Image 1 (spheres, rainbow, N blue to C red):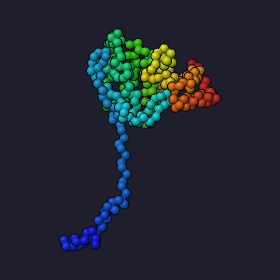
Image 2: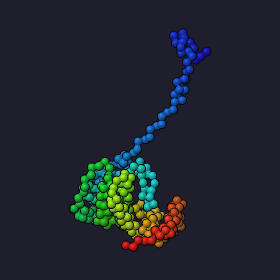
Image 3: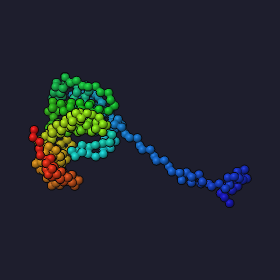
Length: 289
């Protein structure tokens, strides 16, 4: 007797022989359509507004910062510039007061003495003309303006060499990111791309000079970086500017350092191989100015 026997007495005889799980079997045999991919995060989804009080003019304002926990890293350049999916983090490094024009990297923004604040009010706030932007995100043009104001503020307040050098490094990365974004979108004239590349090179040269000086005169950590990281970064920049003697000393120090990880030492060995290949090919000859 079937499990549904007896339904005939209820006027449902046609269902007595029914397969109890027939529909379930059919459902199971059907291929489920693939789940749609998650929506791609846009730049505006990866930033947030944070409130600040300006240490120079006491004004309250907000600035856009990157959600570091939400942005996905997709690699890094040889000079430690980290790349993220959907956003250029370097556009959101600078906090700027829209009232008085004081600007600095987020880590340094509140570190202002009364004398420094006075100098900024006199040499920046009195004459600065700020561009008004209304975009949801920071454009490269706006980000570059913020970085240049941060560098001007650092000069006026006589910031440490390392702070000025780090702003230069971040600004160089910004020019690189802008150029890459234009190339990716098929935009930008050859002249514009060459100009961005030239400015990147200029800021990298300044960053190299500053970091090289800072590692000899300032205590570590420098800009949040330990000795090994700074030495690696300076070595990379030294190679870029064909100062192989500087790079060789720093790479040697890293390879013998007990605090350097095996991963960093492997990267240094790759750098040494790069130098060998450059010298062999003739690319290692420093250009005469």
